Length: 254
Image (cartoon, rainbow, N blue to C red; front, side):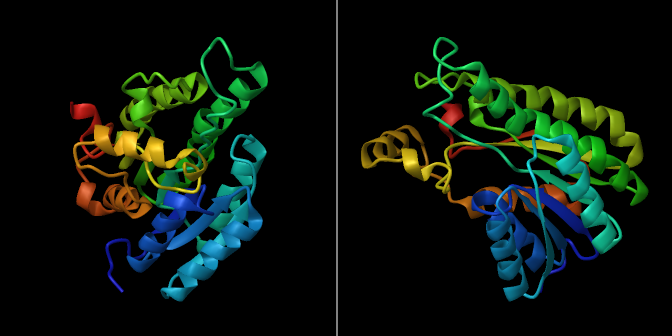
């Protein structure tokens, strides 16, 4: 087993599938103990099983990341089980193209829910998780942004876009506030990724449309985003904070 995260404990939200699950297994391969946060208990426990299969150690903690009490409990259970936390990976998010559309079409109910899961959840995770990083002598906060925060799309998802845009400002604020505590905070902006969250919307026609518009010529795989998160979790990125990493196959470079 490699050792880039040896001795570290990482809490990953939304780790029951997709990028979060890939990151959990990858982090474990690199020596981390992993707290698997997800609203879906069976999915979280399956990720724990996959971590164990590569020789790692993980704990499943279930809850709704938009609810402060649930996030506080996730942090407390992870810290109690492993003794400390060094990495907070705010990966949980939702992408509901059927409910989150233009400002002219989106109901208040769905605005609140999308912003709660994609933005407020990071506020709660850092509110309760950063004190654990401080007690550990430092660490890394990784935020999941999106290229939707950087460019507009004709297929509007305005609640999602607003939430991801807010995460950029929050990331920079946290980076400046907690640099003195040896806590780094960076944000990843993925382009489209072939995850269970995206798959319902990826018809053959839409897949071809995206692939035509991406210079690399294909949609990303979850492992490719998880690998960037690993870099930010490890000491390889020790001089990076407040940074935005765009991982989109060149989509926004055009």
